[in-house]
Length: 160
Image 1 (cartoon, rainbow, N blue to C red):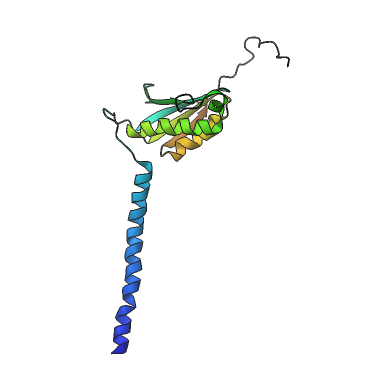
Image 2: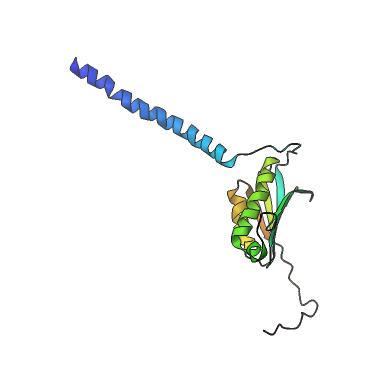
Protein backbone atom coordinates (compact mmCIF):
# COMPACT_ATOMS: atom_id res chain seq x y z
CA UNK A 1 0.00 0.00 0.00
CA UNK A 2 2.87 2.34 0.67
CA UNK A 3 4.02 1.82 -2.92
CA UNK A 4 0.59 2.68 -4.28
CA UNK A 5 0.57 5.95 -2.37
CA UNK A 6 4.01 6.91 -3.72
CA UNK A 7 3.17 6.21 -7.36
CA UNK A 8 0.11 8.48 -7.59
CA UNK A 9 2.06 11.24 -5.83
CA UNK A 10 4.88 11.08 -8.42
CA UNK A 11 2.69 11.67 -11.51
CA UNK A 12 0.90 14.58 -9.86
CA UNK A 13 4.04 16.80 -9.79
CA UNK A 14 4.80 15.80 -13.38
CA UNK A 15 1.30 16.79 -14.42
CA UNK A 16 1.65 20.17 -12.74
CA UNK A 17 4.71 21.20 -14.77
CA UNK A 18 2.96 20.05 -17.95
CA UNK A 19 0.01 22.24 -17.06
CA UNK A 20 2.34 25.19 -16.40
CA UNK A 21 4.15 24.49 -19.68
CA UNK A 22 0.82 24.71 -21.49
CA UNK A 23 -0.05 27.87 -19.63
CA UNK A 24 3.42 29.37 -20.23
CA UNK A 25 2.97 29.95 -23.98
CA UNK A 26 -0.37 31.57 -23.31
CA UNK A 27 1.28 33.82 -20.73
CA UNK A 28 4.11 34.61 -23.14
CA UNK A 29 1.60 35.52 -25.84
CA UNK A 30 -0.19 37.73 -23.34
CA UNK A 31 3.10 39.43 -22.50
CA UNK A 32 3.78 40.06 -26.20
CA UNK A 33 0.35 41.57 -26.65
CA UNK A 34 0.90 43.72 -23.58
CA UNK A 35 4.34 44.83 -24.80
CA UNK A 36 3.15 45.93 -28.26
CA UNK A 37 -0.17 47.48 -27.13
CA UNK A 38 -1.95 48.01 -30.43
CA UNK A 39 -4.49 50.76 -30.00
CA UNK A 40 -7.07 51.39 -32.65
CA UNK A 41 -7.09 55.09 -33.43
CA UNK A 42 -10.41 56.88 -33.45
CA UNK A 43 -11.62 57.05 -37.05
CA UNK A 44 -8.85 54.64 -38.13
CA UNK A 45 -8.87 53.18 -41.59
CA UNK A 46 -7.96 49.55 -42.08
CA UNK A 47 -4.86 49.80 -44.27
CA UNK A 48 -2.91 46.51 -44.23
CA UNK A 49 -0.12 47.50 -46.67
CA UNK A 50 1.85 50.75 -46.76
CA UNK A 51 5.07 52.54 -47.68
CA UNK A 52 7.61 53.88 -45.17
CA UNK A 53 9.59 56.88 -46.45
CA UNK A 54 12.79 57.51 -44.44
CA UNK A 55 14.59 60.78 -45.20
CA UNK A 56 17.93 60.82 -43.38
CA UNK A 57 19.71 64.11 -43.97
CA UNK A 58 22.85 65.30 -42.19
CA UNK A 59 20.75 67.45 -39.85
CA UNK A 60 17.58 65.44 -39.21
CA UNK A 61 15.70 62.19 -39.80
CA UNK A 62 12.05 62.19 -40.88
CA UNK A 63 9.83 59.15 -41.30
CA UNK A 64 6.46 59.27 -43.04
CA UNK A 65 4.22 56.26 -43.57
CA UNK A 66 1.69 56.32 -46.38
CA UNK A 67 -0.73 53.99 -48.09
CA UNK A 68 0.26 52.61 -51.53
CA UNK A 69 -1.40 55.60 -53.26
CA UNK A 70 0.77 58.08 -51.33
CA UNK A 71 -1.70 59.45 -48.77
CA UNK A 72 0.23 60.05 -45.54
CA UNK A 73 -1.08 58.09 -42.54
CA UNK A 74 1.63 58.81 -39.95
CA UNK A 75 4.78 60.89 -39.78
CA UNK A 76 7.45 61.85 -37.29
CA UNK A 77 10.72 63.77 -37.19
CA UNK A 78 13.57 64.45 -34.81
CA UNK A 79 12.12 67.77 -33.69
CA UNK A 80 8.66 66.31 -33.13
CA UNK A 81 10.16 63.66 -30.84
CA UNK A 82 11.84 66.29 -28.66
CA UNK A 83 15.37 66.30 -30.07
CA UNK A 84 17.00 69.68 -30.68
CA UNK A 85 20.08 70.81 -32.54
CA UNK A 86 22.71 68.23 -33.42
CA UNK A 87 20.86 65.47 -31.50
CA UNK A 88 18.26 65.30 -34.29
CA UNK A 89 20.85 63.79 -36.63
CA UNK A 90 21.88 60.89 -34.36
CA UNK A 91 21.12 57.22 -34.92
CA UNK A 92 19.18 57.08 -31.64
CA UNK A 93 16.90 59.88 -32.85
CA UNK A 94 16.28 57.88 -36.03
CA UNK A 95 15.19 54.89 -33.94
CA UNK A 96 12.78 56.91 -31.80
CA UNK A 97 11.33 58.71 -34.83
CA UNK A 98 10.64 55.44 -36.66
CA UNK A 99 9.08 53.81 -33.57
CA UNK A 100 6.69 56.72 -33.03
CA UNK A 101 5.52 56.75 -36.66
CA UNK A 102 5.12 52.94 -36.72
CA UNK A 103 3.03 52.97 -33.56
CA UNK A 104 0.46 55.22 -35.24
CA UNK A 105 0.52 53.16 -38.46
CA UNK A 106 -0.06 49.91 -36.57
CA UNK A 107 -3.06 51.59 -34.94
CA UNK A 108 -4.48 52.02 -38.44
CA UNK A 109 -4.19 48.27 -39.03
CA UNK A 110 -0.95 48.26 -41.04
CA UNK A 111 1.30 45.20 -40.82
CA UNK A 112 3.24 44.98 -44.10
CA UNK A 113 5.36 47.80 -45.54
CA UNK A 114 7.75 48.73 -48.30
CA UNK A 115 10.70 50.81 -47.03
CA UNK A 116 12.17 53.62 -49.15
CA UNK A 117 15.34 55.23 -47.77
CA UNK A 118 16.73 58.53 -49.00
CA UNK A 119 19.77 60.50 -47.92
CA UNK A 120 23.19 59.93 -46.32
CA UNK A 121 22.37 60.61 -42.64
CA UNK A 122 23.11 58.62 -39.49
CA UNK A 123 19.48 57.60 -38.91
CA UNK A 124 19.19 55.37 -41.99
CA UNK A 125 20.09 51.96 -40.58
CA UNK A 126 18.61 52.49 -37.15
CA UNK A 127 15.29 53.67 -38.60
CA UNK A 128 15.03 50.52 -40.76
CA UNK A 129 15.79 48.34 -37.74
CA UNK A 130 13.19 50.18 -35.67
CA UNK A 131 10.52 49.67 -38.35
CA UNK A 132 11.19 45.93 -38.31
CA UNK A 133 11.32 45.76 -34.49
CA UNK A 134 8.04 47.65 -34.09
CA UNK A 135 6.05 44.83 -35.67
CA UNK A 136 5.77 45.99 -39.28
CA UNK A 137 7.07 43.45 -41.80
CA UNK A 138 9.24 45.07 -44.50
CA UNK A 139 8.74 43.39 -47.89
CA UNK A 140 11.16 45.58 -49.86
CA UNK A 141 13.95 47.94 -48.79
CA UNK A 142 14.98 50.40 -51.52
CA UNK A 143 17.54 53.20 -51.54
CA UNK A 144 16.09 56.08 -53.55
CA UNK A 145 18.86 58.63 -52.89
CA UNK A 146 19.14 60.85 -55.98
CA UNK A 147 22.55 60.48 -57.63
CA UNK A 148 23.51 62.81 -60.51
CA UNK A 149 24.75 61.20 -63.73
CA UNK A 150 27.25 64.04 -64.30
CA UNK A 151 24.54 66.65 -63.98
CA UNK A 152 25.07 70.29 -63.15
CA UNK A 153 28.39 71.63 -61.87
CA UNK A 154 28.83 71.23 -58.08
CA UNK A 155 29.49 74.15 -55.72
CA UNK A 156 33.04 75.28 -55.14
CA UNK A 157 35.02 73.29 -52.60
CA UNK A 158 34.79 74.47 -48.96
CA UNK A 159 38.05 75.78 -47.46
CA UNK A 160 38.42 75.25 -43.72
